[in-house]
Image (cartoon, rainbow, N blue to C red; front, side, top):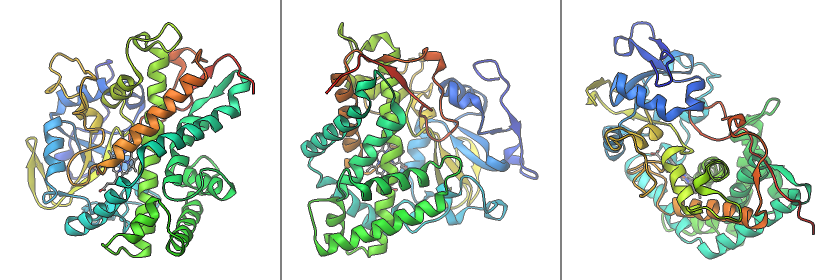
Amino acid sequence: MTATGHPLPHDAPPGCPAHRGAVRLAGLEYQQSPSQLYRALRREHGAVAPVLLEGGIPAWLVLGYSELTYVTNHDELFARDSRRWNQWERIPEDWPLLPFVGYQPSVLFTEGDEHRRRAGVITEALEGVDQFELAHNCRLIADELIARFAGSGSAELMAGYAHALPMRAVVQMCGMPAAGTDTHRLVDDLRISLDAAEGDDPVAAYARVADRLRRLVEEKRAAPGPDVTSRMLAHPAGLTEEEIVQDLISVIAAAQQPTGNWIGNTLRLLLTDERFAVNVSGGRLSVGEALNEVLWLDTPTQNFIGRWAVGDVQLGGRQIWAGDCLVLGLAAGNSDPQIWPEGHVGSENAAHLSFSNGEHRCPYPAPLLADIMARTAVETLLDRLPDLVLGVDPQELTWRPSIWMRGLDALPVHFTPVVG
Ligand code: HEM
């Protein structure tokens, strides 16, 4: 039973004794009250649960904080190249998770020295970002986005603000203007390829993104500037143009969705929790504390797929076989009863797993840059629209139907219209 009294959905793939009693990793519970569900899963299955992905494909969900730390610290046992998966013959061509697990020649799937080479280039290129300039650019983008709805007295903040701001900021960081037809087309295509709506063609959009970034790489080779793309091109590791294109796509994609949802989830917390009352009377807790609390309680990347076992190995009392897939249950790790025995999940420190851990974790300067974008987005909005309130009852807010990303479908708000 889950904490809310519903039976956990059990099922097992044919002929798989390890996955007898496996839990289907889907359903409303993951959207509404995931931390209770993860605690229930952990009580029933321990730190490593047998789960079924879409289409009944077996995998392991790593729920324990210390098991997650172990897995992510031991690349030689649990590695990133998904081609070693022992389930490929069961995966249909239109499997919905294919965009996340299908091998691509990007930093995400590289291992060992090759990964250090690729990740090193990204890290150094991101380290070159001037943080004051980034904050300044984010404020300009925020002002431009807010100006579009400020006069109307109401807005939907997810599409028009929370997701739009980091997307533009990252594209600009990579060397394109924050606005303009060309940038808008790229931003639209990135949105479609990462998060297609009905009627969109994500494959065609992805091809256009790759073409545009190929052109960007050529432009920057001819005329370098103070941007991530130019620094990647100039790096002594000598990445090929195609490697740079692949890794630019990874950087932009890895930045956009989680940062957008981080902004949305923080605004939701500020607008619904009286500890953070955002109006003139002032909240006791700051925006920084709200951002950090979200990383513990409502982290954008709830589950990350994943790692693949290099050989047969034991983990959390389970027998894992070579080629098995492990899903990193980052949200579950953050609320693990082993680290919060009293059931209390605080926001006092940054020891959460929201940026993962180990060799493949979100590369060092990226969390800092994401923090600048998210903090500037939230603070600028509250500054420009100080009497912002939620436009619906808090219970009417709905979460996107995804077990991977935690973000709102929409965040409607009201405020006094601002003219000029
Ligand atoms: C400026 C914003 C960001 C950038 C440029 C960025 C970039 C990246 C890159 C390049 C990777 C791949 C690392 C590798 O495989 O070696 C990555 C991984 C990851 N990022 Fe970020 N990211 C950003 C924001 C965020 C945010 C806001 C979150 C969540 C709160 C997040 C969570 C993660 C996670 C969970 C991984 C997977 C790590 C793993 O495989 O263990 N990132 N990020």
